Length: 195
Image (cartoon, rainbow, N blue to C red; front, side, top):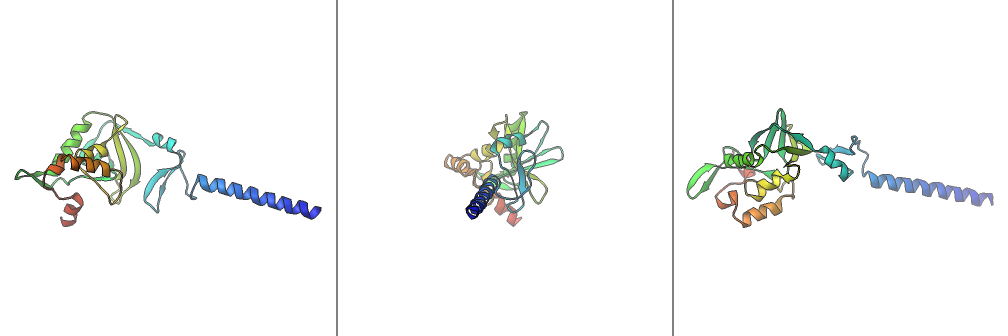
């Protein structure tokens, strides 16, 4: 009788421990430290993510004064943002439309400046690149993605090497012959590799 009680207690303790272990491992798939919003940088994937989707909204940072650097980069004072998942032409990059050559990087930069105008910008940080720029997605009016706008209107390209997020926007621009898709161009990553 005593032996059965001991075995029953051991089984209950083991099952209880196992349940606690399962609950803990499904809540957090790793042992990384998180901030108060449940977010952290994943060093293996070089990304920033949150364990609670509700908390991600709290990570939006709002900016009022900014400087558009090019079609995929904005500075807010000394804070540098590079839009994640897209790549826009470099400022000195040349495109051709109807036998006329022009700086398509300036074309993309101007489009971004006009889109933002004097609207409120919010951004969500995703990671930091080797140039110490914040990689993230920025929005106007708290809802419209600037990255999506740039790619969907043909001013930038889906940067498939790093993200699949804007491929449908690029397909739309290409299908409708928008922006850079109606001219001769070189992909920005090819241009940078050669120059």
